[in-house]
Image (cartoon, rainbow, N blue to C red; front, side):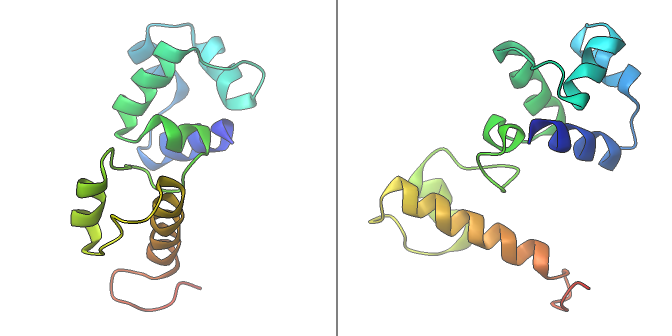
Length: 114
């Protein structure tokens, strides 16, 4: 999952692998192996990548579909005005994932994506 996310995020920013490797202060071939799935970034590199792309580490790892996840229930509730504070964390994550799915399904003007 991380390979697809890294490629997608890099392409969204219209960057090449060399730029990302320079930011991470690693060899370009090392970064290329991350995208090919031949090597896994270490913990510190994951954090740097998440910061660079302004996403959560969980998003990079495929643990959530939401690029930026909230750390607290209060922040989560404020972001979509739903009272889900009484739900367990796992249920909150499912609600957030479903909201992300709906956002991806519909364009900003409310029309169904084709």
